[in-house]
Length: 82
Image (cartoon, rainbow, N blue to C red; front, top):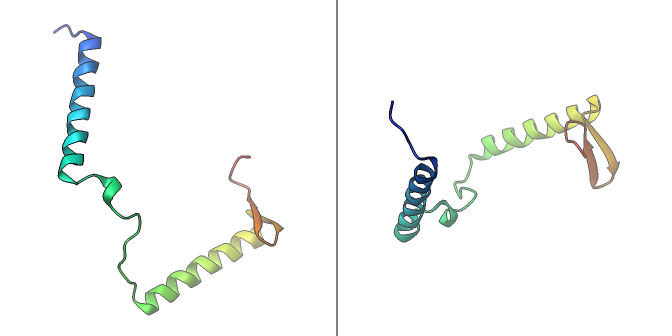
């Protein structure tokens, strides 16, 4: 079995990560440059279907008590701590 110096091993890994990060920044392939959302438009029927699915899921959560309405614009979700 070969012996490895932990500190040197970690240092090598950190150097590789820094090099890869720097290469991405220099080539412009960093994820920070990418938009968070796609600008692709949905089909109008698909957009409506997605809206309705979300609407009915929200209504079901309110009815079952998973989400509690506190004020007109404030809600409390039971599965979230705090």
